Amino acid sequence: MLKIICLQVHPDDEYALMHEGGYGKTEMWYVLDCEPDSYLYYGLNRTLTKEEFRQHIENNTILDLLNIVPVHKGDVFFIPAGTIHAIGAGIVICEIQQNSNTTYRIYDYNRKDKDGKQRELHIDKALDVADLVQAPALKPISQENIVLLADCKYFTVYRLRTENKMTVKIDKASFHSLIVTEGNGMIRMNNTETEFNMGDSIFISAQDRYYEIMGKCEIVLSHI
Ligand SMILES: [Zn+2]
Image (tube, rainbow, N blue to C red; front, side, top):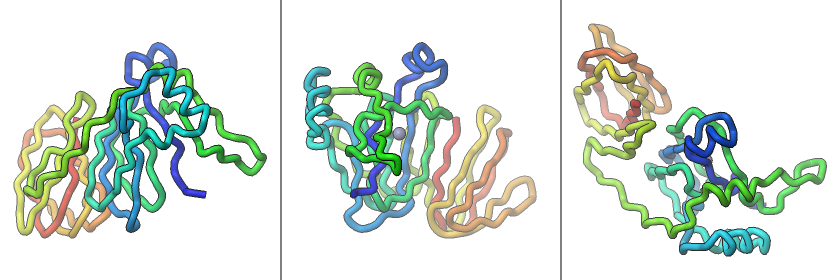
């Protein structure tokens, strides 16, 4: 059995507030590490009608209609509400997301739990919210030192790379959340220095200042 998280879709805020009493979910995945030949499902490989979509779920052929995307370390997937997705085995991601867990399960590979039961699916709601238009091709990420990975009304995410030193401006509008995805170094701010290593998360509260990232490292920075 392939270890794949069940095929799912998340609603947007408008739908989630009306039907779930909570917020929707837009998320971004940054691939920290993965096994060779890892892949995930991201959006449809052709445009479908609701009726076709439902039939393919019922016939267990829905996976044939999804984009299978090979995954490499450092890849980025922006997953707006409505995008059908499932992550494959052997992929370690860091997730930047709206603070919500409203998930509609579309297909669970007919898996059964230890009591022989299948997990509940939410086909009707998934049909309400899923984007059934063929997904656009994913663009490769630039190799520059400062790259904007995602910018939506919920979060803005950059990848920063430095060989030596980088100065970053923070303002009062938002905190900065840093995840060290490569290397190690030190943050210098307000005359204090904080060392970091790969895998660390660093939270910097909102304030009007500059701070320095020193070392040879790669950092994923998100703010709201
Ligand atoms: Zn998801």
